[in-house]
Amino acid sequence: MLELRAIDKVYESRQGRVTAVEGVSLKLEKGEFCVLLGPSGAGKSTVLRVINGMTQATNGEVSFDGELVTRRNRRSIQNRIGTIHQQFFLVPRLSVLDNVLSGMLPKLGFLRSMLKLFASADRKRACELLGKVELKESQLYQKAGKLSGGQQQRVAIARAFIRNPDLVLADEPVASLDPSTSRGILRLLRGAAHETGATVLCSLHQVDLAHEFADRIVAMRQGKLVFDGKPSELDEAMLAHIYDGTPTSSQSASTSKPRSHEEAVVSMPGLEVAPA
Ligand SMILES: Nc1ncnc2c1ncn2[C@@H]1O[C@H](COP(=O)(O)OP(=O)(O)OP(=O)(O)O)[C@@H](O)[C@H]1O
Image (cartoon, rainbow, N blue to C red):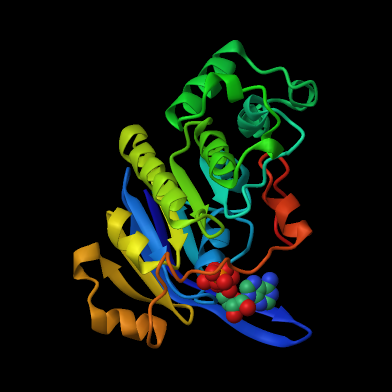
């Protein structure tokens, strides 16, 4: 359903050029839970940003269901993609239910979205999704900012799935959560992929979690794709190559780098802006 062909991404800044991604080709199948594994700086986030159109690839092509992604159709393809982030990016002062419904904003017209005129079917679906991610009815009208990290990520999952996406991109969704909460979140994400038929591409740096949950692992090292296969096929030698020594596990994982406020705003559903 999603195909990347020979993607390169070079960032240019005053500090110089950084080749973040080099020659990445990848085909994802419908309904699979695919983990994009690799150490910090391997290029995982950049691949996800190229797929959702937040960053333009320097070279290469992305196609979605056989249709090449171009400037013209990028917006409509973005509407078929749900996103989940490490920092959740909920609106803390809004209720849990409104946060999930905010996932619908890009689909509403301007006026309806300003007035937040959600259809009753959308409200019903938001409540159903919140049940599936195991939030209690009593929490629906609670302010999202009052929830624990794990609960906030559950709300973010419900928000990502409300538009019935074909693809969900999850960028380090458990990096700031403890190991047991992380397992709960990954179980939900994998279950959602299998149940809805949406493809989930989830970046992680914890090898044990990738082994436990992935249908397929695609691993990156220094911008290049170095492994693509079943978790059982990822052996010690390859892991040592990917991690230059000791792989990261959920016990040893530290939280990844903080993102800028600008990036947070850019990533809010409904407020997505085209890359510079
Ligand atoms: N906007 C940018 N400008 C310049 N360099 C960048 C930019 N974004 C990422 N990079 C660089 O590109 C490389 C890959 O970064 P990327 O964030 O894609 O890796 P990652 O595997 O997702 O790492 P992490 O898990 O730490 O987020 C790194 O060297 C990073 O410093």
